[in-house]
Image (cartoon, rainbow, N blue to C red):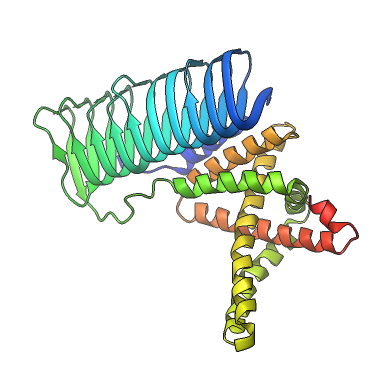
Length: 376
């Protein structure tokens, strides 16, 4: 068995994420969001600090700086944030992306986490498969199926009833660890396995170079995109959604304009910097160029969010719904980019589409009277 995330698994994850759109029945956005009691539907929230200590009958989808999840969720949990503390009981799947992630919960089905630092406590129980990727991963809980970890530093002291596949810079199997299936790992050096750790299946080692100990699924880049997307929409909602509409209405023109801008702009900027009188103009053009690239990618992410909602015949009309939809899209794209060639090609296409659509929308706005008002 080789460590990989197949196209089928990623597309399945995408379907799971998109199904999180069903009703948008209950949602909140604020600097601080707290929810208690019982929510008889799906719940969506975004904010600086989000504290969910409620019985959620449906799915829970949240994003923000600090996230706290407790009590009981009868559906899926999808979360993206700077720091995430997951507790309580989740009856279905959990999908998390965060800078620091602490898991101390009972999870009924699969767990997938991408983060800078991931800790799974000894009291955690996971009913299905578990995928963990990050800079540092400490796994002390119980996994009832297979475990997959990719990280710079990996430490395992928990129980796994299935197979284990590891890929990392440094790997330790600590005292008290129990692996009832096979253990296959890739690392520059052999793992440190405590004499009292138990591995009942076959143990295989494959030597490899480790050049990205803290990459994680591009977690920090994904979090940056989430924050930037929220800021872009809150400041320029009209421009953002008009540009998204252009991606749908005129994709080939958007793609062409985006490609030309991507190639020509840096060339012109470099030429200008070689001329004494054009140095500051060239440097300013380069600065605006990088802002345009980020904006274009965000427009592409908003397009993916809207596209997913339309496929499920759902309307995304409020600010909270937009924030949730783009967060889900960015998390999904973060996993899709792991697919060799296809993932990178898709993100590149979205960048070109968003970049071209953004420029076309700017041209349309400022070629008409009252253009600035239209942007806002």
